[in-house]
Length: 69
Ligand SMILES: [Zn+2]
Image (cartoon, rainbow, N blue to C red; front, side):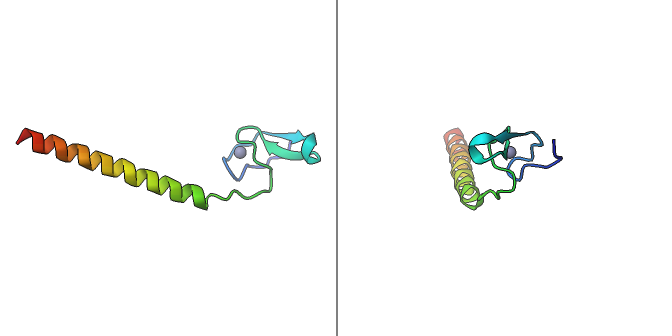
């Protein structure tokens, strides 16, 4: 087994996929070895999700604080 690291998840376990002409596919995430992940869109979505979570937490804290007054 080659000591290659998956660019997507960092796993070192690969399997050869005959459907893809024997290319090495990551066992953990299924990403082809040598392919670069397009994580820009995922990062933006993650940021949006964190904004929503932060807004929810801030709103909850505000409601709790206001209800104690
Ligand atoms: Zn992977």
